[in-house]
Length: 58
Image (cartoon, rainbow, N blue to C red; front, side, top):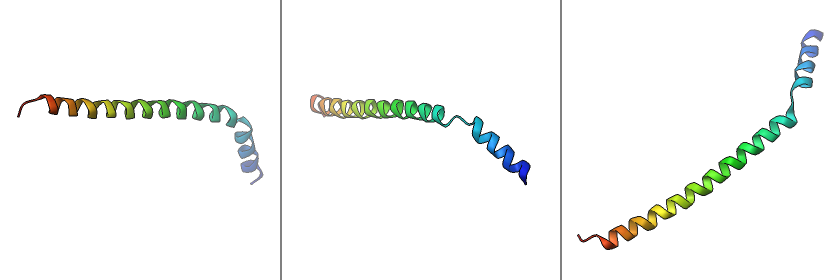
């Protein structure tokens, strides 16, 4: 049992929580930027579709 506790302690001692948090923050920033770009692209596509429908004879 003491060996398990010791190995668990060593694992958490080596585990770099601050680095993981920085990586997750960077990934979250990238995802948020991509979501914003996606929203802008979707709005542009909707507008272009409306213009196309207005300018296309039926």
